[in-house]
Length: 238
Ligand SMILES: [Zn+2]
Image (tube, rainbow, N blue to C red; front, side, top):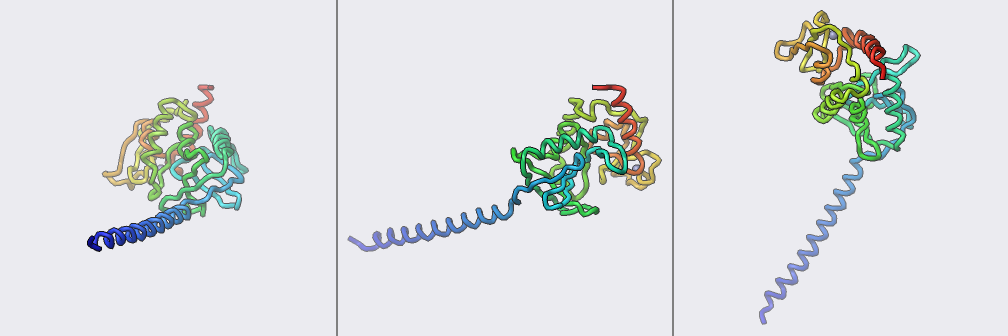
C-alpha cells in the first residue's frame, strides 16, 4: 500500500479542521461586530410632539423625514392635529424601548439627534405617523435614506383621507416648488425667486405639492396653511 493517500487524507482532515477554526473565528467576529453595530434599545422618557422624543438620558431626538404639526406649547396653541399627532406617537412609544437608526447627519442645527425610530415590532415610528396622516414628508438633505419608502406611505394616507388629509385646504395657488430642497413657496416668496429653472416646479394646489413630497416653506406658507387647515377641518367635522 502506498503511503501517499493516507498522508493525503490526513492532511485533508488537518486542513479541514483549520478551515473550520478559521470559519468559526470569522463567524464569531461577524456576530460580535454585528452586535456592536446594532444599537441597544433605548427607553423614552417624554414625547413632546408628533416628531420629537426625549430619551431617558435626556437626549432630544428628532424623527427624520417627517414633520408633525406642533402640539400646544407655552409659546402657542396646537396646530391642527398637533395634539392627535403627539398622542399617536405616545401610543407607539408605549409599545416598548426603541432602536434608533441614524442617517448621514447625527444632529440637526438645534443639536437634536436625528433618527429613524424603530419600535419593538420592527415597524418605523416615522413611517407610521405618515400612514395615519398625522405628519407630512419632510426631506432634509443629505438625510434621505428612506425618502423613497416614506413618500408612498404619505401618498397612500392622502388617498385614504387619513388625519390631516381629510380636509386639505384649498388655498389659492399657484405655488413654486424647489426640486432640490423639496420645499414649496408662495410665488412672491424671496426664496422662490432664487430657484434655478431646472429645479423649479409649479404646483396648482397644496394637495399636488404635498403629493410630490414637498413641504411648505416656513417663512412664506407654513402659518397660512396651518390657519387654513384649521378652518377647513372645522368645516368638515369627522
Ligand atoms: Zn417661501
